[in-house]
Amino acid sequence: MTAPSRGRDQQFEPVYHYYGPHRVGLPPLVPYFRELWHRRGFAAEMSKATMRGANTTTFFGQAWLILNPLLLAGVYYLLVTIIRGRHEPSLFLHLTLGLFAFNLVGTSINTGATSVTNSGRLLINIAFPRLLMPLAAVRTAFYRFLPTVPVYFFFHIIFAPREWHPRMILSLYFLGTLILFSMGLAAFFATLQVYFRDTSNFLPYFVRIWMYLSPVLWLPEMILHLPQWIHTLIKINPLYSMLGGYAELLQEGKIPPLYMWITSLAWGVGVAAIGFLFFISREREFAVRLN
Amino acid sequence: MSSLSDSIETVPALAVRVEDLSITYRTTFERKPTLRQAIVRFGRGKRAIKEVEALRNVSFEVYAGTAMGIIGANGAGKSTLMRAIAGILPPTSGSVEVWGKASTLLALGVGFNKNLSGRENIILGGLASGLSRAEVEERAAEVAEWTELGDFIDMPMHTYSSGMSARLGFSVAVNMKPDILMIDEALSTGDAHFREKANAKMAELRDSARAMFLVSHGLNSIKEMCTEAIWLDHGTLMMRGDPEEVADAYIKFAKVKKEGSAVEDM
Image (cartoon, rainbow over all chains, first blue to last red; front, side, top):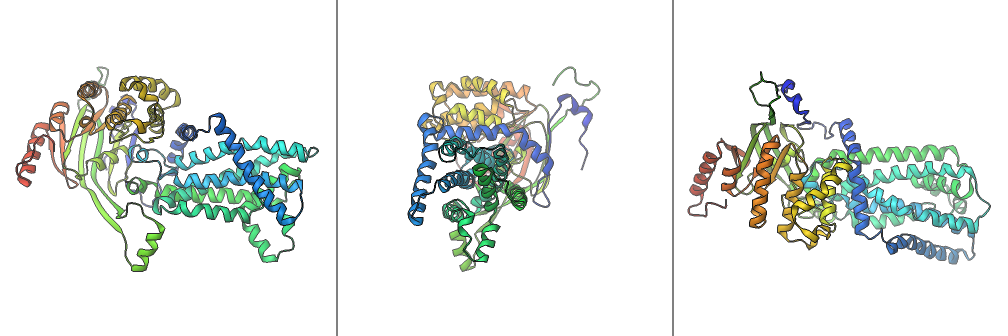
């Protein structure tokens, strides 16, 4: 291969691109992520535009973002109260907190899955790091999650007015791992959706079951009587550490055990790495598959 | 390009080099592949993968200042070639080298998100093609005005006619100051007034952009606008040279294949 003659090209300061066949399926990762970072504004705009399209920036759109999880929390709380036969404010707090955080993951998965297949012409006509699409979906999910934070604090003030602690700030660590985890899952399911367009039909059921297996509707101390193998199973669930740690810190200001810190970070980083790499290794085929 | 360029150098700089490029892709028969169908197919022991050889061993070089016309029948690989140069489709073998930023290929049909307004699509298109926020905002107003869509620019794109969305696509591709401009079938849509405006803009860009690619079935516009042309047929490069000659050869070839069809729209 002849080397590009640099001397005469420098006057244009050209952006030089070389497109060759990729051997192992992955493009060079450092330039890829540099480019991704460079175009992050696109993901932000994409997500803003989606929210504008869904009227989330209007008053009632915003109100719905609060009303919807609130109604859900109400419904689930009613259910749990009926089953248990008594009212427990701390459980209500836990339920709202867990549900709002879980919705962040659930929405990321559901909207992330269709982010690539719904992008239409954009993907066929413009070259850009495709990973921006699922990441934009996670951003949207995060911005839909934000209005629920003050709602939780409102309940916190009512039901646990004395439980305030500087340690609550540490819950951001678990929120961070949740977001990282969501990004990985969004990328993973977006890829799957390209190959199997009915993935997004199965996902809501999968997400629902996952929610029941996570400490959202129940507290860890409520399952102590269950057999050991169920405990093991439940602790393997990445959301057990993430949601558990998040709730413990925010609700009670308790420092979660060390293993929770480690497993949630490991799950977050691990799933993000796997999801991203799977996505990136496949993304050059998307343009062909979406025709 | 500029008078300041080193005077010793007489060879013009390269803009695009395509070397022995082949693109083969695997695609499915199904319009919407689903897991359900995959399982059903697996049970029957069938696979729905089809290999498409879109380009076969294509090589050519484009020097700065060239306006390259691409001629060929439907399915000849013209759009695939454009997408390979834009970096959207990776080569199966061979390589593509591009010196400069390639434009978007929005002109190829409608805009990308129909629920968003024309203006939002302009901004998204600009950001996706790598411009900064400030640059995009500066240009969005310019582009919006240039399209002459009036109030439609702030309406969702599903209210647009096909001509209007083609106009918008063309404007985005053209106004984001690309080094390598690629226009795909843009001139076949749009009314007489816009065609004229588009032609004028392309003439202007032919001088300022490093290189221009024009894919068109309108052979006359290729003859008018381009300084060179290539002719693709079933993924192979048939001919490269002067637009007049290439167009004539292509017409001859098409006529031999199918007697007595309209010559202009091929």
